[in-house]
Image (cartoon, rainbow, N blue to C red; front, side, top):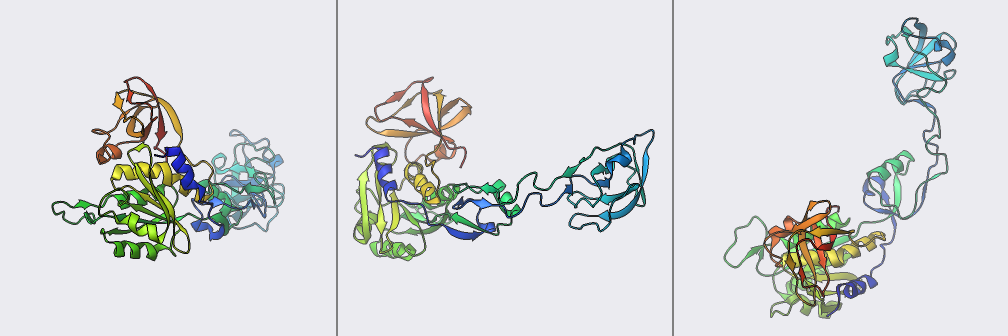
Length: 403
């Protein structure tokens, strides 16, 4: 059997970063920038007020106080988005709103809270220094400055700066499009009644959600019954639509496991066993003339999820253009004992009980125990040569708390 690292290296070997393209800014969130972005103008692009108040000449109000206020004539009223055509001269002021351009002649802004809020004349009860409450042009970004570099993950804060510098179109590595196919004649859609021997299809929903959390655009196909013709049709139908096909079920040694049979003649797909628990049967390769990558996962839901974390999530992140492919690791204390099978690297579900401690999650570590998976926010990474962990032992965990 291959080790987890050996198998993951093999899966990643054939995966590259998706070719960049231009997307509207509204679609670029979650993508990785493929080109530096420079600002065509300064930020701010003009001197503007940081407060609602009055644009004044600072020398006019230098002596103003509550006991001896200064009265000025208001010669204009300027909301944001407009510019005053008046010039402030000694003895005058312009009523100004936050973000509005500073009128000619003014060198300070007095906040409205320090005035009587007058509209024809204004009484000012506190002085202002030169530059008070004025945002100067280019104090944030100068024209031509690089505001985001190639390889930056575009989150909400990055969207803001892209919008501010006018990037309506953004050159990015797109989110991978992933088709998720679950197989098995025992599967029915959630919400339908279950006859004896049938189960609700949780895998496809699990994997679609996991793909989306990893930054992909994923959609469900199926469930597909254990029929070679139907599975072949389902796979072929996706070849021109996606960057990756993900299947669950049908990769073990069962008599009705159609995935291995069909994919063996549709492309170059290798099926193997990986020394891990859960998730031993695995497969990956390329299918169709387009050589679309495909990863086949085992059918037990916990096995499917652990396999996704170990192999699929790194593939998605590489396709997106990211370099940190694996979950962050933490060293913590396991507060309860745990056993592990000899010769297999186990990923045991666990939950944090403090920032530095975890306990196993759920009733056992079987590949069908979904309650424990739902309650987990960490995976204890137990090496293949470790068969038991005592309460109080230090362990390495994969932190699942942040998508």
